[in-house]
Length: 513
Ligand code: NAP
Image 1: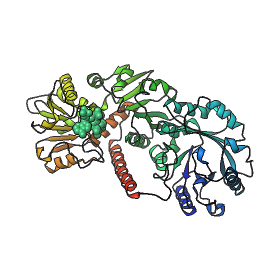
Image 2: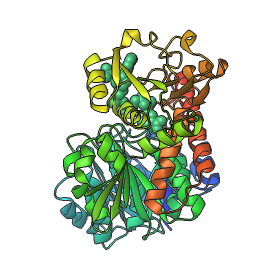
Image 3: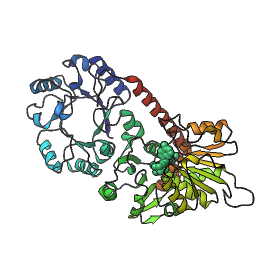
């Protein structure tokens, strides 16, 4: 079973020892003490007195991403002392490994870091590390493309010595999570979310509780979400929780993929044999060109949010569309005398982007008289024309009466929670109000609509429903919807707490990149 090594980087011994103990109590398999962060000479008597978990001693100089500001001779002396004190592992960069001999039971991690790129000659680098008497090899590079994840992961299987290899940066996050599946003995995580030590580093809680790193096996199926930005996506939380709940051996990771990288992305990560993708901004339209089969919603809206690998080809689905329509149909009773769910109802859709597109097409198809109201008139006009709706300028949005109001703009989204896309006085009890914004769940629009007795649909309901439908396409199993909703709610609450804490913290004892 792969383990998690928690890195502890504090300037004071007292705090380093406290975090070391807390990490061990919370289940860290290994703790890396970043001696280079200590303001004073390490006191190993104090640091190692209790030894609640096996320890890696690391003392990184500045050009290797560390904080040590003394001389190289001093640094080597500290590392020798750590070995003499019997630390379980010592981390030695390749250029000093020869000068610090093996002694006692301390195992040697011979490490290579590259903060600029994932170099072409990785295999040569590894051959060199192998020649330096390692017990473990550590290779950490900066990912400049999603493909770099594949390159470092392949290294793990090709190397004779146990190898920890992953990429830094947001583009490298998948490799931090997947390295266990490829055979790395452990991955690294930060203890404290406010003190990340390297770009793209995940916290212990994320690696253990969101990605279930301990449970990842060689056979785990991989699923992913792709988009840009992607790091705050709720999708890994809800999908991984559902996999665990149902005992499915699968892992779901976030891939940041820029527009430029998307055209070759599926081929770039083909060796990972990813079974399915959630697709988000900005790739929903361009992904349509990648599928051999597109469902009816994708063909109508010309955008998708789900890719599923079938025998050798990709299938495209639009569960945003299906989720929104299911929710609307469940809340709006079909008028008497019509079989169309929204026959004759007047719908006002605010926004003319991707989500508006799916909802406008769906409402028109179900018989609603749709008005699109967009900030950019031409965009609203084009969507309305294509879908068979009408359009009005943004300033006139409260000038038309409606039965169904749908907000498809980001107005009201965190942190602008005091904004509402229409004046509350516009809302009437008979209306169905759907806000696609899901952070927060109870936007000002939703609160005002509830206050006036309107039926409401929240963006979080839509988010979870599209994830549920996606999960069913991925696994052909019923998704645990209530659990997924509870996980999404909990995660949003934690995001708010973290943001509030970060805001209130100001300068910290030892602010970290
Ligand atoms: P998008 O393609 O970027 O479209 C956003 C639309 O909102 C555009 O029409 C834009 O106007 C308009 N807009 C942006 N800021 C505005 C402002 N200050 N005033 C008026 N209009 C404004 O984004 P999308 O993918 O459609 O997403 C729209 C919203 O849906 C997101 O903010 C998100 O909260 C929500 N969403 C929810 C789910 C879910 O599952 N619940 C999923 C995806 C998205 P222009 O045309 O002038 O640019």
